[in-house]
Length: 391
Ligand SMILES: Cc1cc2nc3c(=O)[nH]c(=O)nc-3n(C[C@H](O)[C@H](O)[C@H](O)COP(=O)(O)O)c2cc1C
Image 1: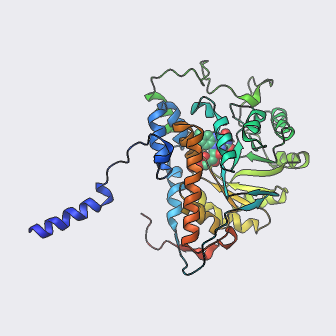
Image 2: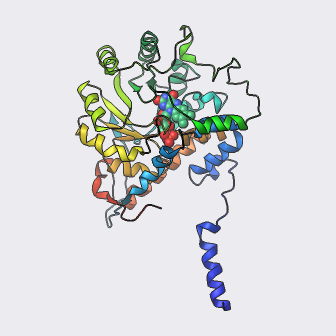
Image 3: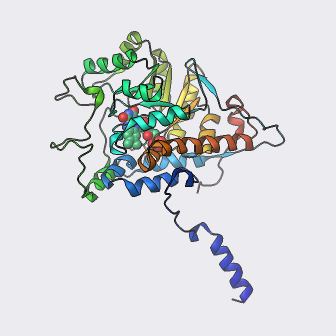
């Protein structure tokens, strides 16, 4: 090889992603370039068992990967010479104005990630004008979270093994002013979270802040269960059917969403039951190992719903372009899960805020680049199917 050829080869190598160094771990939120910087920081700070609980999918984590790679099935068709000096990300959802189409998905047991659990998230969501969905497995009460958020949040419901308990839970959320109830229906069968199990074995740290030391005990401080006799009552209800949805629809004044729908068959049944919306979700790939990313499930659900109610989506959303693609396929809004928890674990409230800011900035940028000035202007003409095998 002569000198010139060798120089060209080394220049090629230096520019190659294969040669790139691992990103340094950030020490403050403002150093983050994208949400993955928070993932590295969270990994560094959390005990392996907690990080494993956060990151795990199920079985081989194939669905977890599909939630990400599904976004590579679509490419974008940018448009030029459109006045994009003003871009509006707002929307009206269930009668309320939202600044952006981004919500924070319900994540249980946030005490595993921060001593104050859901409260810094509530403050961050309020500061960033973003809606938080509070898990049934919250470590703080709905009243405390609403107070921290300065307004009622949305509430996520597990029907639990006892429908009497489920009734008490949603009635308490309704009394606290929560405007929207999201009934999660995708973990009824149980699940095989192998990555979480393996991570536990790596953990030698004794955790007293959030674990119940009793045999079989998991995270404690289940604030919403206090005062309820939960002895022998599992959180998943194997016998749950659409009958419960019918009862719930008749009983609650809250807007009712079903979280965990991934097929057109179930979307149609949900519509027949008069629910107000659907969240296309596979629980962040923590339910069954279907191998199917949620973005791949979205079109059939959108088709079945036919514009009769809002359809939200979550799972693997890490980039503004992911949000853009989901909206272009017909989603009304999106939820993110793990990224804001990475922010919470690493830096508390400022970390959560920065994650929201980054995603909003990326969405704004791609909207401008594609010549879309409002969410209403984002449609399927912005997309092209990927012709070659995704990277
Ligand atoms: C650690 C963890 C806990 C979760 N807890 C709940 C929960 O209590 N209720 C629920 O409906 N979904 C729960 N989910 C699923 C999320 O609401 C959401 O569907 C998922 O995180 C979205 O995928 P993403 O993390 O890839 O953004 C949890 C997810 C994670 C990662």
